[in-house]
Length: 139
Image (cartoon, one colour):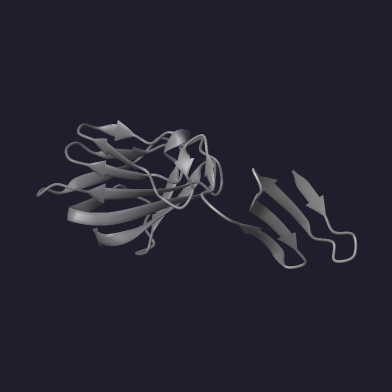
């Protein structure tokens, strides 16, 4: 049931008598797990990839754990999308700049990069055709 408090403006949402969501003047408080169709929003899902792989929109908010192959960063993603890449192998891998995408890294270049063995990198899209790449073990 929903309880609205006219004097304070709070709105409370209950499930079987247990408070689950409460609005306040400073925001929202949630009791319990917050999830969407991808799962729990406090846990980053890990997706293992063993061959060459091109990032897709559903990788947003995930960690791609590579055990073989390379990763391609494509064009046509949405601004704000973030993907973490783990090189979970004892060999280097390439994070390849896809066709039509600008892939900037902390050294100022716009190019394919090598991720060292057991390195971690993060891709952040700032537009459909522009992304930033940062992490440990990039060269």
